Each structure stands twice: as C-alpha cells, then as structure tokens.
Length: 282
Image (cartoon, rainbow, N blue to C red; front, side, top):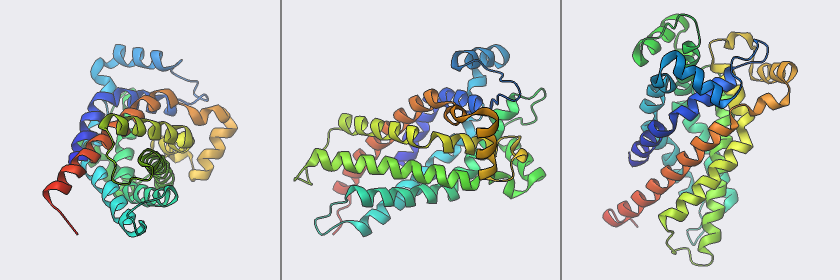
C-alpha cells in the first residue's frame, strides 16, 4: 500500500514527462511528424489544451499504481524468499530472475490494461474530435467497442517490456546493495543511498528496453490495427522510420523513471524496516 501511495504521488509529479514520451513515440515520420521535439510537444499541447492537457491519461496510471506496486513487490518478495542462500543473501543473478517474474506478473495482472487505456487516452487527445470524456467513460467505450481484449492490446510487448524492466532494475539494485553491504548483510543503507541506487537502476532499465517501450506504445495506440503482431510492428518501425525511432521519448522517460524508481524503493525499504519491527517473524 505504501509503495502504491508513493507511486501515485510520483506519477502526479512526473506524469507530464510520461505524456510527452508517449506523444513522441506515437508521432510517426510517415504522417509526417507533428512534433519537432520535447519542447515543441509541450508547447503545442499547452497551446491547444492548456496545462491540463499534459495530464491527459493520468487517471489510468493513478488508479493502477497501488495494485501494480502490490503485485510487483509481492511477487518479488515471494520469489526472493525462495531463492536466498543459507545466510539470507540474494545474489544478483537470482535478483534478476525474481525481478523478471515480478515484471511478467505485473504486466499480465495490471500494467497491460492500465497502459492500454493510458495510451488510448493520450492518442485520443490528438484527434480532431476526442471521444473519451473521462477515465470511466473511456474504459466503458473501449470495452463496448472492442471487448475486454481491447484493454489487452500489446500484451506480448508489455510482458517483454515489464519483464525486462524489473529484471534489470532488481538486478542492479541487488548488485548495488550487495556491493554496499560487503561482508555484513545486516548493514543498514541510508535512504538517500537507496534513492541513488534506485535512480541508477531506473536509468539502466530505460537504456536497456526503450525499444520495447516504443513497440508497446504503438501496439496500444488508436492505430494499433496497422500491425499484425509485435514482430510486425518492430519490422515496420525499422523499415519506415529507421533504428533511431526505437529510442523516441528516451529523455522524458529517463527523467520520470529515475525519479519513480528512486522514490518507490526509498519508501519500500523504509516501510519494510518499520513492518519488521512491528511484526517480527521467524
């Protein structure tokens, strides 16, 4: 719950960067491109829809932040408790596998429908006559016209993205924690250091899987029907836009993700410490 609240606060602060990232990823050269870069995207959005336009699609991420955090850390803790050695230490390779499992679980249970709705909302705003009036109206319209599967577009790309996301993040976090603690597994870590480690882990995941994020965004947009599959989407992006298109939105995503991961890991670590003092277990 604490991680969900932290994630919700973080999303409210940094969502404009997520909005800009998504818009840039949806902006295809074949159209031709509507935006000349990050600043131009922000300027056009504010001029056309006001500052509130930068928060279009926020509700879908906000409503999903608590269950996403619960699934992610719940599955990670479950798997890591099974994979620790006799001394209770989790090595980086096992941390990678636990993170992979957590990412796949959150992708299927929460992230795919949440991200699909978010992308459709943001994409809808760029159309001449936006058809979604709000979160619940939008979800109702998507389900009415496309069925429940309409909220699960790009599932394969989402599983690949979230699986690699959490695998990279938990691998980096586990490696940095083990390096910092050295031979003393009980050594405490200052929250600021935890935040710094989280920011590094977030940055690593951005550079490691932004191409998957671009593919996922295209597969979940209003023009997803143009693609037959995840592979077909990747091939068409490469053919029509070139390899650099796979890194569209990297800068705004980097800012949001680093802050996101840093805040969530700080809150998570501190709450775990409190819970361990309140509820002692064998």
